[in-house]
Length: 227
Image 1 (spheres, rainbow, N blue to C red):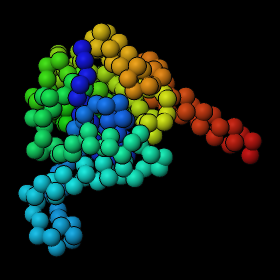
Image 2 (tube, helix red, strand yellow; image 1 turned 60 degrees about the vertical axis):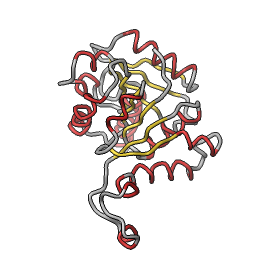
Image 3 (cartoon, rainbow, N blue to C red; image 1 turned 135 degrees about the horizontal axis):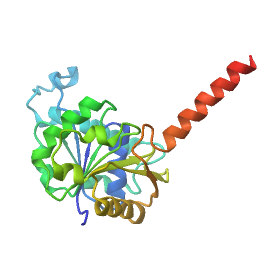
Image 4 (tube, rainbow, N blue to C red; image 1 turned 90 degrees about the vertical axis):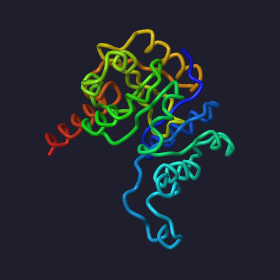
């Protein structure tokens, strides 16, 4: 297994900065998001249409632009941003076949994630690793309905915000994840991306959020009793 090119699905704060950190490690990356359904006033003034590439890639481009302006800086050097290519889910899914690692980082909604997996699966390279940046949705639930090969190569890689600076990386496997795929992914994120890997069980909240939620609820319980 090797990772020469990656894709990040979702150009929000986390997705764009995950793509930036991959670029920091010298890995070319696709950054994809939805294609807009309405023009902005600025686009209308320029005579653009919903078919214009600049419009269709507006959301992913905005994510990349935000990563370029992030404080603290998301990129080691400004030139690293040149390794990121923006696109959208309507036009560019066939380009996923070029990618060795596809990272999903869209909204934390189970059905929306499943719907996206259904759309991307026909375009994936058969040996691609597919991971979710979910912070707590069970991986087994996310993998339901996908092919045997998809489930074999599917696991969780939970980055923390901001991805360049926070050391922790939760690796979450589901029952059908190939152990060799999980081991390779953990080694790659450690050795190439500089992450401190924590193995998590496929349980709601995994490790960090499970502890965090318990701590917050315990604190609220203590406060309520002290009153």
